[in-house]
Amino acid sequence: MFQKILIANRGEIALRVLRACKELGIQTVVVHSTADADAMHVRLADESVCIGPPPSRDSYLNIHQIVAACEITGADAVHPGYGFLSENAKFADILVAHNITFIGPSGDHIRIMGDKIEAKRTAKRLGIPVVPGSDGAVTDEKEAKRIAAEIGYPVIIKASAGGGGRGMKVALTEADLDIALQTARSEAGAAFGDDAVYIEKYLQKPRHIEVQVFGDGFGRGVHFGERDCSLQRRHQKVWEEANSPALNAEERSRIGGICAKAIADLGYSGAGTIEFLYENGEFYFIEMNTRLQVEHPVTEAITGIDLVHEQIRVASGGGLSVRQEDIKFNGHAIECRINAEDPRTFTPSPGTITHFHTPGGLGIRVDSGVYSGYKIPPYYDSLIGKLIVHGRNRVECMMRLRRALDEFVVDGIKTTLPLFRDLVGNADIANGDYDIHWLEKYLAKEE
Ligand code: MV4
Image (tube, rainbow, N blue to C red; front, side, top):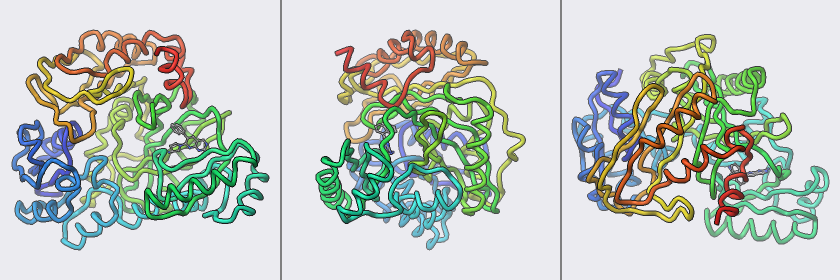
């Protein structure tokens, strides 16, 4: 097991990883920018190293500074959290070259999944169902037309270096295709320095359902069920739940089994998330994330398994603490992302939190790095906390969520709490009847 882990992140996820390290008896080091000297992760860690000025590229993204912080403190492993360097293959490789363990998959697996064409090709080879479309990159307009005619309109053109919704263009008919292809390629070239694009059938009303997987580092793979992340705005998830209200146990076990086998065959190590669009009872792979995700606590709530413990165990060579048959799905969990933002426009609202009071009681978890008197710096993302609620079933979970939202107090700044108080009273949400466009339509109506 590791002696000392360096946490290369900030905010609630840095605290989340700190807690796991403390439980495992592992010493902790955090890094921080000058803007985060008063942050909770700095206060709770055994040691801290200031690695640079506020902008992320000079601090939390500065590989040399982070490697130096490892050398100075004698850390033998790095947990990257999510965002920042968590899916940076070069960072993973550099750590390995310095004899420091990256708590995550190999640089090569990160690289494959970061290239969306390569990721899709790999998924298909491993038996994961993918969205019908081109076999690889498409450059030629004639070829694009041939593929589009074959799969049928509408089609979507995506950047291979994109992901998370960046660099996509929809063509409703053949008349739109040339322009869509040209714009997608030139935008991809400008944004990512790589103009490779691919074509897919455009699914019009899917849900976003993702499967939590783990490779144990010894060629075995397991799944921890799925999360439904359809409630999002501009590709930012707002509300996530497990299980998906759209799936039954048979569908869960079928898609989970396919993913677990793929992870085993790939020889993948650590936590991963395989993202699907789900429409008319079918799953279509879109991307794989090679990190722990923001919404991992809903999976922890229904499985009772600490996913950060598992990440650390696997990275240290100790394998997983559970086999597939030990993983049971109990009840229902919902996560609300509390952002320091206007609840309608989502404009960031940094500043001082004058009063912060979190809800409690059975089935309630709050993961947050803020406190009363904390001043939110304007340099980073606006997530200030996550409310995760668990119940024996979805109805109980929703009742408990409504009550928890009533107890939650965040004064001094605007937050997305009022949006969640509206959503828990909405009939479609109560019925689990929503797709990836539901929230944006709802917000447009409420203007
Ligand atoms: C799609 C799609 C429809 N059809 N692909 C957006 C984020 C990126 N991960 C993939 N995305 C989409 N890919 C096909 N073939 C619709 C989206 C999409 C979306 C996906 C998941 C969650 C929210 C979304 C919002 C708009 C579009």
